[in-house]
Image (cartoon, rainbow, N blue to C red; front, top):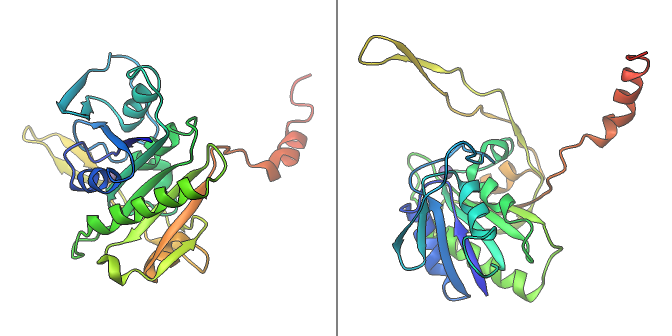
Length: 252
Ligand code: MN
């Protein structure tokens, strides 16, 4: 089995190295990841400039581009064979609730949706004072790959996995979850550049708002691995009729 591994933290990140090591027991692993941290890149593609791919070491490639660029290249012609699965991570930080919309980690997994097996994004819920147990995340990833091989899910399914930042033995188990959501994010933070001009930093994500039972936030807070099945269709089906009547007679 050929497993493509990517992330949004860059090809040198601790999480992707741990992931490669853990998955190497299950198949042939290739890393293709951004040259640097591209967290928050979401599903962006680089269209105005060409992409350059560098081989850092055998089976480890980096791209001056986004996570989506990386996976897109890998499954659309960079290699003369097909991968079976994309695993993205292990991200340094949670991707819970609305984080999923901004996440490059999730985007890399989403870009692998046309392959034969489900793909997943895996994030370690690191905090300033937590232990950075990337090996825990990598071991969870290997467990999920084994389960997918033994018991395949439908094609094109994307799993968003969040792992508490604890030693593996302290995990409570697995929970299937829905995405919770956050309050509005914090304000942007103004600062001055060396020439006295005002610049802005994007502020931190908002605190959790819907983090009740059944959500990804709740599972992780309870010490469980959270597994959320995602789909790409953002259509709000329940609003189709309302919007249709709202448009009635708008053009005569
Ligand atoms: Mn990241």
